[in-house]
Image 1 (cartoon, rainbow, N blue to C red):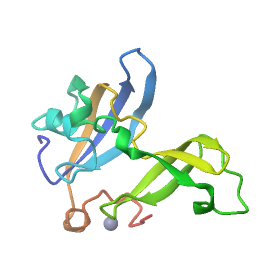
Image 2 (cartoon, rainbow, N blue to C red):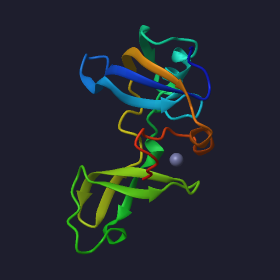
Image 3 (cartoon, helix red, strand yellow):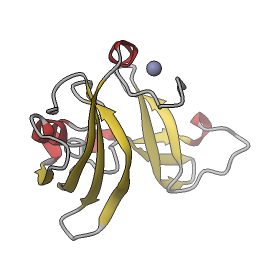
Image 4 (cartoon, rainbow, N blue to C red):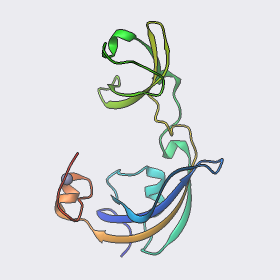
Length: 161
Ligand code: ZN
């Protein structure tokens, strides 16, 4: 079976930046995704199309095909009163926020200065070239329900966030 749309693919992978730092790793094949449903970044998904179980490949993904370029306009100063009063706000904290399009995004506090809080809405991996070493562990056909939902269901049944 080849990887194509509507297949559930399990992978073992190591993700490194250009300085050889391991960003993410999963080596037991427990990571799986639904091909063609934008579950994973496009640069990696495209490289996997047509591959079969047992194949190993190294893929370098440019930021444009990964988590995007860094955008300085996503760094904003917001008043302290936008945050819960009873919570201490410090650099490194992450919050849900809405971008101007109304999409739910994560923003990270990068600085707190007096009444001003600086938040960065860029993905932490924005602007980073991604180097994947991937082994394809298993490929199966997705169920009708998985295709309808656009994600993989675990073998034990159906659970959602
Ligand atoms: Zn579902």
